[in-house]
Image (cartoon, rainbow, N blue to C red; front, side, top):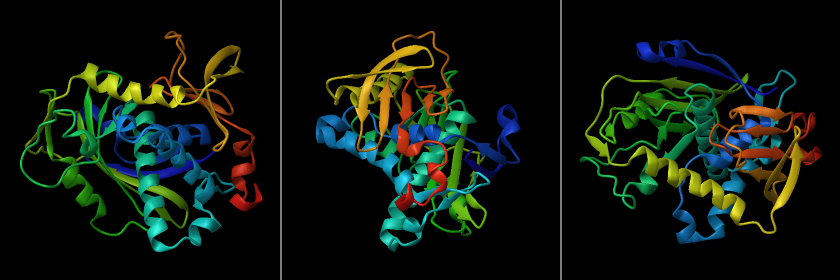
Length: 303
């Protein structure tokens, strides 16, 4: 199974168990779920139509095209990544940093919903304090707490100062819906010789920006964007997975099936089988045959 090493520091007593670091074990369905779901909210479709959906699906393709799994489970740069030009590597590492942030939030922070702060600060009546620096993401945990994340991505080793800069950006938020975030996380994903890793810190303090958005509105904007992923594909497809029937959308160009089960009693945040993950946010993602066992151990051109 894929694994990502990490180091973690600075979390206060309520989250002190996160300090120290270790190895985050995951699956390719979880990684693809993270890539597809991180970030934008309902409203970008109004501006850009189906192209916003294409952008989400494209993130999954980046994982397939540029990463390879080592026999140890470490996630390495594929030959295609090594051969990319600097600007391409910048785009890949940025997307990978956001994906790792979403995966970390899901698996260790119990935060299934994240939205881009900058994209929606103006359009959704989010008021801010002075200053140009701001974090990437705000999130809502399963227990109703707020989190703030600034996520960086690097194609090579983690240079000095990257996490410090991320921490400063994460500190800019004072309150969300009148409440201080339970953590303000600065993190950076990077490639060590041993494979993909990330470093994360929760600094002490808070800035002057106040985000005026309720939990209900935040969840609605996130959930509406997920539903758009299903609605853009007609006719709807059907799959039988682990004894249940799911109605959803096929994306053959990325070899994905997506569904939002209506059954609220389903246990979320778990693998349903080897190829299917049901996220805590309610989005089910099944990977097709091109992602199946052993394929990601091969270079992309050999799969």
